[in-house]
Image (cartoon, rainbow, N blue to C red):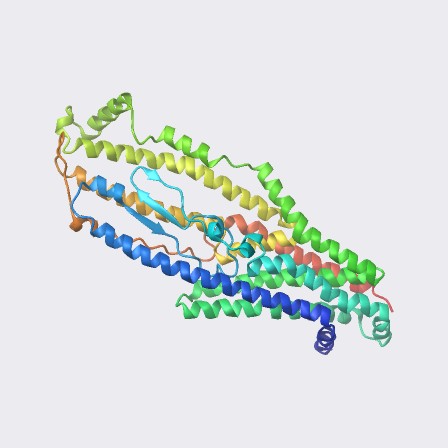
Length: 465
């Protein structure tokens, strides 16, 4: 019986041009935004691959020189765009896409896509995820209003109840009809487009497939709870005008007001130090140049480490001192920058937790996590690039320390050493790795889904002819 009722409700929706064409317009906009972001990501990845190949050729062909100078010469590492970024770009437009890997420095990421964004992209609602989470509630509430509020005004609801149709069947059929129409047009087509895009690009694998499935589940759950809330509120309120006002106000609260309140709350509760303050701390604790007093302490430490009494007994004291300072900076970077990144992750975790205030917040945080575009995934690239930098610099310094050179003497090497450094490659983390900051969002989304189902059940029991 419910399937028959669902088909009837869908037919009613299609006959209402205002609601149905609003849904179709949003669905078209979702697909257009996906296509625009996907084509942009494809161009960006092609450029990154070309420049990465040129960087590798430059590194290998840099000629004979001091290995530590080669470590300063170094290379750029490029972050590939996540395969599901066209579904939800997350932080990608606002963080750098390349980093200069050189000795003594853990540099900032460069080249933020938002710097070259179009006016539409700068508005904010320019991705499938943003469109669905931002305007999905408005469209769903309009569909719910169409099926329930006006239906009750015309008296057809009373006729159906008087014909011995169980109230729960009526309520469930309306909620399922709204959800199936919204999910079938807003979520399923763009997910299939993402998978087809991945297949064409040769990027589709088990992890990407599961990520796309999880993202689909997040969006479908979000639309399901909104459908239940929309139907329940339309049934609860007394007339069509009051129902429309209540639904419109709830959209503003869920999708517009509370996410901004949550963002402001996070910034006030867990503020971040300025980038200038972080860089100043790094410069003070891991200076590129050291004083005479620090140089004397370094020499004393090197003598103890090498078990000698004279600096001349160390094969290459200059390289040994450079290596000492390099390894000292590693600990400073881990403590200072690691602490800063931990604060950013703490902000993300708090924002995800505030998803219990609004399902839109929960869906936004969970969506970026599933697509691999939240800050935790960006930090994974930073950590991988930094490990590569340290391995490269340590290898260069080790080669220098292994060869005797004093005073103005300099040990040099050539392509035979440079080619031993492997090409930089970034393997993105698997689904579930490094996404702990988004776990509260998943819990919040589940809680909202359960609460919406309970609310719908309560309303259906109170329904009378």
